[in-house]
Image (tube, rainbow, N blue to C red; front, side, top):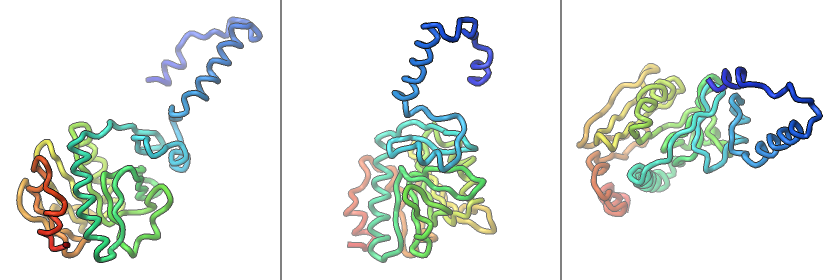
Amino acid sequence: MREQEAITRPQTASRPLTSPVSDEESLRQRLLEVLLPSSAPRKMTYEEFLAWADEDTLAEWVDGEVAMYSPASNRHQDMVRFLAAILSVFVETSDLGVIRPAPFQIKLGPDLPGREPDLLFVAVDHLDRLKETYLDGPADLVVEIASPESIGRDRGDKFYEYARGGVPEYWLIDPEMEWAEFYQLEGGRYRMAFSGKEGRYDALVLTGFWLRVEWLWQEPLPKVLDVLRELGLI
């Protein structure tokens, strides 16, 4: 719609090209382009997107365009912090790989979008996929904390993209509904391994790690040290 408006907007070309008004308008436009570097081009390659975006940019790359998304809530960030903390200790204790919380891009394939999961795990055998600003290929585990704004993407586009891209395990956690779903890849499709608001889920790619689902709905969330003790990590 914006492109169409740009085509049909009344033009000022009837003024002489050398008129002071035209020169002033041209200069103003150039100044705006310099002073507003955060405005994204409508179409760009993934490499251009990575060069354009910075650590504070809330965006993903989809079909050559920038898809902006809303800032996260306190509850969302608390849950990301909680999961990142306990998963990081488990992974580092056994030297299994690395945990990357957002913001960090993942590019699953040449014809797939560049996404920014809330949390991802990369196993030691796949650390060569880690580039300076993104993961080039599938993570071994992806975690999305859903919000009312993102639940459609998390259950829709991203669900199929992660499966198609070869992510072996996908956790989808919905704090609003107090509901968690854990998927494991079989034959190129996700099979639900566990769902619910309480109970124990044993991870697929993190052998020996388990999560008590009801921890996720506690307010405030459990103390990380208490959870680590229950997991036998300290």
